[in-house]
Image (cartoon, rainbow, N blue to C red; front, side):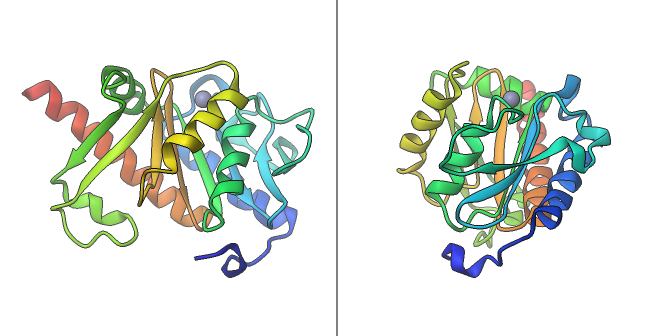
Amino acid sequence: MSSEMLPPLEFSEAAQGVIAMARHAGARGWVPATSGNFSVRMNDTSAALTATGANKEQLDESGVIEALIAGPRHPRASAEAPLHLARYAAAPEIGAIAHIHSIAATVLSRRHEKAGFLRIEGWELLKAFPGVTTHETVFDIPIVPNDQDTDRMAALVEERLSNVSPCHGYLIAGHGLYVWGDTATNAIRHMDAFDFLLTTELHWEGMR
Ligand SMILES: [Zn+2]
């Protein structure tokens, strides 16, 4: 699917999607201490993105900015803006991105950092992702090392993800999860599915 198939959105419409994702994650404790960030693509050149430091659980439009996908960084953009914008530049089918610091994502990403991926297989909820029709599916979720230089980390992520297809999300070691969809509604669905799968995997590993 190309970006021409994603309808362009006005800022306020895209911001509503950002707010919906942020409040959903905030209500579930996945973005503690003003962490996490969310974005919705407006068109080929810009995206609505959470501003730095915004309280996600109570986010409103004042906590959302319009960021240029390939332009200079917005002064109020989250430090992790490059990780969103590089995804939009690389994958025209992506319309919304969520980044959360859930406990399961944070623990498993660190435990499996050396392997470079987390394998998830055999769970019914894998079918929450587009094109997946059976639990007999193997997801190797890429794990990249954490880096405070987010431009450098975004370049590494895109290099890693260029070899992974299909890819619905990735983990940053000891940090959290990036997940996306064509719309904010589907990004929320994928965020819920990932959290369920990662939480299940965390319990499962603890039992083995
Ligand atoms: Zn983060």
